[in-house]
Image 1 (cartoon, rainbow, N blue to C red):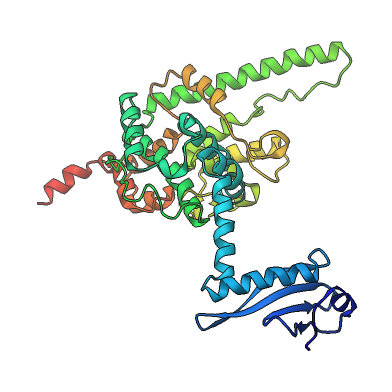
Image 2: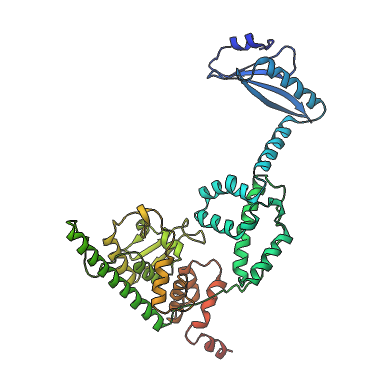
Length: 409
């Protein structure tokens, strides 16, 4: 359909069952498209470098017919000079985005945080760490984080006593942010391209509990439970005196998360994040099996872990105390717990454990398996290691393993 496009003509166009175009009789490529719903949009059809394109000008009546004609005329002139309006529009959009998020802080706030919150399960912790590690450089331009600047961070952190593995993790967080900036075309190229991680011992730190330390830890957990029960009794005395209903005081009741969480970690080797993400739906007590789903696993792969008698007993007792649905170890209002440092550090101190972290319960689980004669490949599967090198950290604990190897020569 051909018609000179002006205010009266465009206003008179009526919607039909299917969309249709009305082309201008004077300006080549200038047209209005009428959608079935009644929306009228101005376009300019053009050919550039052998390809046909359509550029959207605006919607009537927000954009008048005369205004659309003026824009179409100007763009036609650009096209005649070889300028692609689509490419220019994209470039303008990218530049506007770059101007609004040119610094690390601006990019984190406006682009990275919303994306990370939607896609990364550890988004909050990761963002807090990035903002802390690079607090003095939050207002620095994104492209300034080059090799020279990264080396400055490394040297400063080395002098402060940080280990290469920790430095690599902090730098990797920044690298991930800048990679996202490249994906969004905020940066043309990655400013950290070519920056290699520091060399570290792949086997890493291995600290596990001796039999005496395991006894001390269990004793500290029992003592803590006893103190919690005594505190509950005192609190109930206070409530009764004020005519409030007392809370349950059953002896042996698991009053909070720490004891069952520690004992489950000792008997399954779960990481802290895996424990905090564990759901009752993934715990099969009759079948004595626990499943770490891919979404909660560090490796991104599902694995199944048999439950021994103590793990089953602890989880059964804990389920009686909870509602048996949702997260196994929920935080406030049933949401995922984020921090157990205070309660854990108190027990570790009471047990007089030196240089021992919650993650070392996982090492203890693996060490106990190897010392019991379990083969390393089975240990690897239970631990969820993708690389057998990680499991080889425990090889020296195998009973007479090295001696047998030497004797076989």
